[in-house]
Structures are given as C-alpha cells and as structure tokens.
Amino acid sequence: MDLAFTPEEQAFREEVRDWVRAHLPPEIAHKVHNALRLTRDDMQGWARILGQKGWLAFGWPREFGGPGWTAVQKHLFEEECAMAGAPRIMPFGPVMVAPVIMAYGTPEQQRRFLPGIADGSVWWSQGYSEPGSGSDLASLKTRAERRGDKYIVNGQKTWTTLGQHGDWMFNLVRTSNEGKPQTGISFLLLDMKSPGVTVRPIRLLDGECEVNEVFFDNVEVPVENLIGEENKGWTYAKLLLSHERTNIADVNRAKRELERLKRIAKNEGLWDDNRFRDQIALLEVDVVALEMLVLRVLSMEKSGKNPLDIAGLLKIRGSEIQQRYSELMMLAAGPFALPLIHEAMDAGWQGDAAAGAIGGFPGGTLANAPLASTYFNMRKTTIYGGSNEVQRNIVAQTVLG
View 1 (cartoon, rainbow, N blue to C red):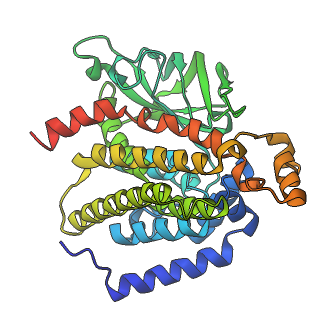
View 2 (view 1 turned 180 degrees about the vertical axis):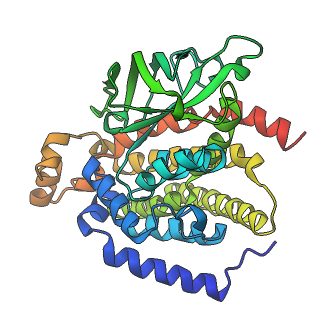
C-alpha cells in the first residue's frame, strides 16, 4: 500500500486548486467557511459552474460523459473543493442515482437522465426512508401497482433532504408482497412535478426546513422509468447505499472544519487552554486516521479490489467526527453560539455581531451565530444513511466475519 501521491497526482491537485479558486464565487466561499445559510441558488449555481467544466460528474467514466478520473484524482478534487470553501456537491444525482442508472439503466434511460445530472440542471431527491422504515428499509410500504404502461404510486416518504427543491426523485417502492421483504421492491424514477405529489417541509428546531415529508396520491409513473427489473430494486439500492455511506464520511470537509475550529478557539481565547487544545488534538488524530483509511480504500481501488464492504466503517467514523467538531465549536463560543436569526443574517445584520463590532466583546462575530444550530443538526449524522448501531452489525458480519 502506497499512501504517497505521485508527481502527476500532485500536478493534478494544483490544476484543480487553481481552477476552483478562479471560478468559485467568493461570496459563496465566505458562507461555507462560516457555516452561513446556503440558498438553492448558491448550491445549484456552483453545480452549474462545475457542470460547464465537466466536473460535476467527477466520479463518472468517460463513456458516460465524466472525466474518467482515478479514485485518487476524485479524492484530490473533493479535498481541494472543500478546502477552498466550495459547497458540498449534492450527492443524490451525480454520486448516488447516476451510478445506478449507468449500471442497470437502459441506454434510453442513460441518454435521457444522465445529461441533466452532469450539467447541474436537474435536482434529484432520494425517496428511501418512510415512517417506520429507516434502518429497516426493507419494511417500506409505499406501493406501486402496475396498470398497463404505468405504475400507480401511493404512500409516503420522510426525511427527504432538500426535497422542496427536487425536480426528480429516485424512489424505492413495493411492487410485491411475496417472499422476503427485500424481494418485492422496485426502483422507480419519479417526476416530482407529477400530479399527486405533495412535499411538506419539516421545520426543525433552528427554523430551517432541511428535510421534508413527501406524499404520493395515485401518482402515475411510466413503466419506462423503472430501473432494471421489477422486484429487483433492493439489489440496486444496495449499490447506491454503499456510495452514500462512503460519501457521508466526508473526510475533506472534516479537515476544513478542523481548521475552522482552530480559528474559533483562537478568537475565543481558548487556544492557550491546555484542556481544550487536548480535545482539538484528539480530534485531529482521528481526522488523520480517517484520512488514512480513505487513502487505504483508494489504494485498494487502484489495485483493482472492491473496498465497498467497509463503507459502513467509513460512515461510522466520519459521522462521529462531524459531531465532535461541531460540539467543540459550540463549546468554544459558549453563549455566543446561541443567537441565530436567519432573516436578519440574510439581510446582513445579526444583533450580537453588530454589538461585537461596537463593543468589542468576545463572541460577537457572525461566524459564531450558527454554531449551536449546527451542533443540533449534526445529531442526525449517526442516524441517517443507516444508523451507526446497524452499521456496526454490518461491519461485524462482512468485515470481521
């Protein structure tokens, strides 16, 4: 196993770094570095910029319109984007459903759906979790009944991330009740503008509507939007979940947020507190260890091995690290992490920030305002994408034997 980057890979890193710095709008980078609210236009705008370059589909092979990068090049691209303050690429289209369409979709489906994913013009949502069907996803109840050349879909999905922005949804639906629960699931592509689709935002404690409920009332979906074979959707879903759990680890964002934590600790006068610096050091050791694990996975891919069986392990460690750095940031800011008035911040004003500029008291900075809400939001990371308790069972069975 060789964890060192080659001269060619280092040159590639420089190319990506220069391009991202030249094309990433500075106002978006400012928001990302300070965890301020990103609008749909912010996220979609960056996706379109990448799409014009051909880099939104950074993980795709050339035959499907991607750059054909190696696993190491993909990692370096994600790292440079994260460190520059680029918004995280919404994974539902380019990272999650696209590989399924490439692997199991018909040529017609590939020609129809992949271009809109690659250029950032179509926003995809994920229709997996349901009330009562989260980690036990095979118990899902949303039903699709075939009638001629259409499926009639009825049911409900929940925790649909940014579903209020969705144009299309990849949807797991039940098409049979015979045999094991996994054997009666199909994989449908559904137009969210279809009659009978209702998206209801779920307002969280911080006032945001990051997740949604989606209801289907006799929604008509053409049979041509079925991926692969009917009742074989669980096979396709597992491929997608392996990509999702690897993506959740997000070591590159962890490296960027570690630097942000250090800045906050210095601003709040905690950099010289040995106890607090010990916590930062412990976190940094774990971030480095996670990066080494990611590089091991990349090394395995370079040698032709399939490392996706340890995707659950990446998800476990990555999600726990996200929770730890968000908690340390909040603790560093103390009570100044509490106020968060989105409407005021969007208008360019935040009470404590303004007072801090006048009075000069510690904590009165705009960057501190979102810290408490970020901490509470990050409680989700060990639950979504398959809870960490379930992931530990999977790792024990597939990796440890």
